[in-house]
Amino acid sequence: MIDTLLIGGKGTIGAGLRTYLPQLDADYRIASADLPGAPDKAIDPHAQREFLDLDASKDDQRLRSALQGRDLVVYLARKDPLTEMNAMTDRVFRAVMDVCPGAVMIGSSSVHATGGAYYGYTREEDSPIAARRFEEVDPWPEPLSVMTEPCPTGDYGVEKAYVEAWCHRLGAIGQSAVAARWGGINDTNGKKDEISYFTVWCHQEDSARFVDACYKTAKAGNLRPSAHYYVISNNTYNIFDIETTRREIGYEPRHNAETMYG
Picture 1 (cartoon, rainbow, N blue to C red):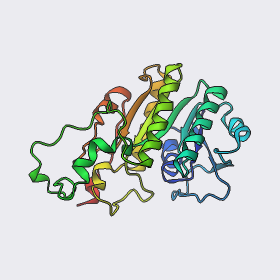
Picture 2: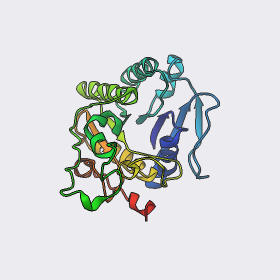
Picture 3: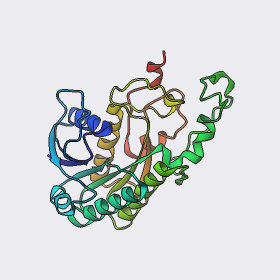
């Protein structure tokens, strides 16, 4: 069994992991630690539903108990304001280091961690990419490298860069850790009325494919230390580097945002 703990697993990303990871490999046994009363966003009736009531920002003892014996930990929880979010990140990563140093740790970052590097393509008032006037884009920009250092433009990006720093810290002491620069994941896996959403869109199944690839690459001893990767579907008009992710961990996304814009 692959004993997995999702910290904040009732949310949109966690709902997808609880649905699709067991479809990829029946050995995944997933528990989700969430705030008491948190709504479950899983739609599929077959999504795994083992829940633990836990406030990861406060209850260190229950957090450490939940981490016992885990093979894979995915940190998805978040809260506001930034100072409290970063304090929770400190608590979670320290507990993982102490309790399950052999576990593979995946920390939730976001494309927003590098917003300063791609907003020019997607947020400018008359950006042809944002407006889907693709015939005007010649040449198409080089995909934003996974090696791009964090360059956030707001508190949300800053909190994600902080998670990335912790993943680097774990990697420096020999623990398998990956920062997932999640794209736009939603619980319906469909179109969202948001500017340039097609460039960041990621199907829940593809997010699970990424986590599965990270775990199995780590277990094979081939995970690059302190890696961070963009987690984007195989979108026709992608502006992010997922080829490095394919090459290094065997990530194979199956979905394309253009199927939602036909």
